[in-house]
Amino acid sequence: MADTQKTATLTIDGASYDLPIYSPTAGPDVLDIRKLYSQAGVFTYDPGFTSTSACDSTITFIDGGKGELLHRGYPIDQLAGKSHYLEVCYLLLYGELPSAVELEKFELTITRHTMIHEQMHNFFRGFRRDAHPMAIMVGAVGAMAAFYHDSTDISDPHQREVASHRLIAKVPTIAAMAYKYSIGQPFVYPRNDLDYAANFLHMCFAVPAEEYVVDPILARAMDRIFTLHADHEQNASTSTVRLASSSGANPFACIAAGIACLWGPAHGGANQACLEMLKEIGSVERIPEFIARAKDKDDPFRLMGFGHRVYKNFDPRATVMKQSADEVLDLLGVENNPVLGVAKELEQAALADPYFAEKKLFPNVDFYSGIILEAMGFPTSMFTPIFALSRTVGWISQWKEQLADPGMKIGRPRQLYLGETLRDYTDIEKR
Image (cartoon, rainbow, N blue to C red; front, top):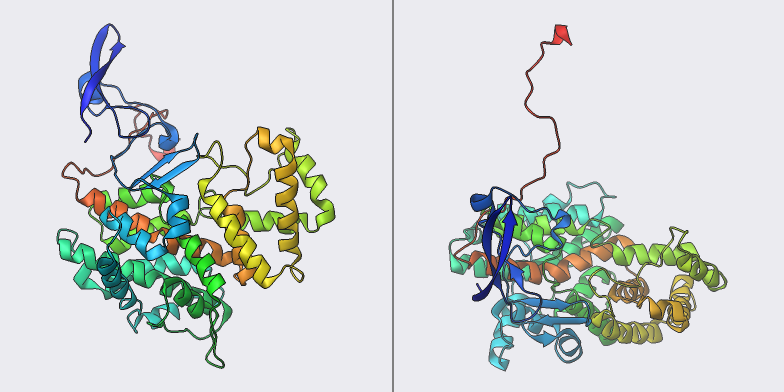
């Protein structure tokens, strides 16, 4: 916990209460209200917890006004441009960039854990053939606790470490299997000679009938998608993981809870919503119509993939993702995909319109990631599972950090009760 050298005085019905103020290394000061109820008998009211710090953390920092995202102090554009996903995983997990020896050992460990227990194949076959991949992801990741008993004891540091490695390694395999199952193709086993991103693409798109070679441009774009989604501070799914963890739940249950929360369209489905909007626009000729609708305050339509709830300037992830989108579209082309053609023209039209610049409605990471995944051949139903496997390391890092906190308590939000007060039960014949 940060040191406090300032206090705030709150006066209620003539009584005054001194509340400590903590100053973080970055971001706004934080008012400590933990003793407010015991001392003053009142709660605070903050729906959505948008003004509440539920924990202290050293992992990720976001300054929405500046358009800044830092992992352990490193800017996301540097990490996405110069590093790669597994190195960023190491950074998030352990707090520092690895040495060459440390990175090699970590990559080898993850690579050697990518296969899942063979009996889990039977678990997959219990789902309907048209099950949504996210439904399969929630069930399969939660079921890992039934297959890996030797890494569920959260009080054992070694078991926590093993669980962390297993989740980072196996969630891509589970996501690829969910995709294969949804399209009726046989599962493709992971390969130890491929890197993390290339291995995922191979498991998704290879078939037994012929050889599939992963294009390095696509593998790099996939790696950047993973990196840019690795962690994003205390968002809804991360807070869900922490809340589940506070009860002492096993790591697989906690990550499954995070996946379930990410499934919500207001959280993990943004890039899918963006692609659906592009399909609604349909053709380049209709772009001016939808631009006009987006600028009309009386029209409920809004451009998906533009602007961001947290970033009030620009999304620092979007610049790197745009580069990957351009590389992928140059490689694969857009001639036979009208959706991608609309995306390219809409991007240019919005960037050239002063209205969007004034409102700071720039294309965000979801706009470009959706374009990339569509170009690669992924259906929109796979966008959120890919987000989930990318975010797994962030959830695990937050989970490990929380368990190491000696002051951890089970989460228990309070409420502003507006229901009936005490009343007596009425027998049914008298109602």
